[in-house]
Image 1: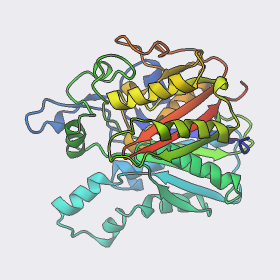
Image 2: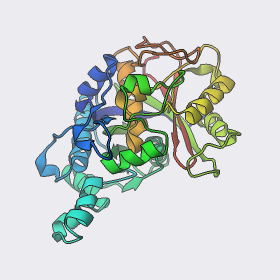
Image 3: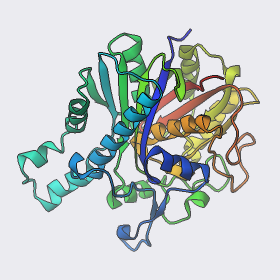
Length: 387
């Protein structure tokens, strides 16, 4: 049986839709992609590519970069939200920041524009400890604070780490933030060259998870914060448990035997004290690439009952890399809160149990899977409150 569940008590988001969880929800519920064409990214003969970039905004006093401003904005929104839902900070509040590529724009300027010569203050702004240190100071939190990274599975990794901290009594509460503001023209180009990202087509046509003709994902950015605790009067979701594994197979390819992905799903259910027949939805990694979609669909078909359905919101929010699973858990949390799971509409023939557009949720658990480049597998088991 699983340990006591963890509550998602508050949410804050910054995505390609804008600054705030209401902007995220309105975009998802409308079935509108956050990606737009980026004229400033025209390089090497490209037309303006499509990407779901976080727009300018935030508080300039939070730092010079969108990364710092988005991280602080999302955290503040989540903390304020949690307090309205009945959360009171315990004595030991920890902070976990899921991040893979931090401060990409500032590091580029440091090396290319400034030749490595900046003020000490500006140099310290580049350090991965700076955003979490300044947030801890702002709220006078004194629990442990650290970064965690597992490529595209970083959001799930951070959530499971937070649960372990609370389950073992290291902290009373965790502020969990996942931030990825890394879609520069150079990074976008390399993902396109890898054959997994699409930049030259309408997002809803190019990225079709679990459907025929999908060409890959549209890149996105985001920062998502969650206040995690236990015994909250009005949480968004209960996190029952989860698991992670590693293929130890290849730097980009999934092990075709699917041994460790399958093990990860099974161990996630065991850790959560759940059984496959209790699962109603798979909020899939679903990037729209043939390799990942085929692997996830195979595991889904093998493990879960015929009543279970799956969906992916990557055509809508974009693939937010290190923040992807946190953005996608937020979609499920807001979906249950509004009694509408924000699945995108289908545009082609696909998996027979793929949700086709926004859907009123049925009874049962949701499994959120996330597969990170290099062999990272992860799954968390979620239950809406009062269901």
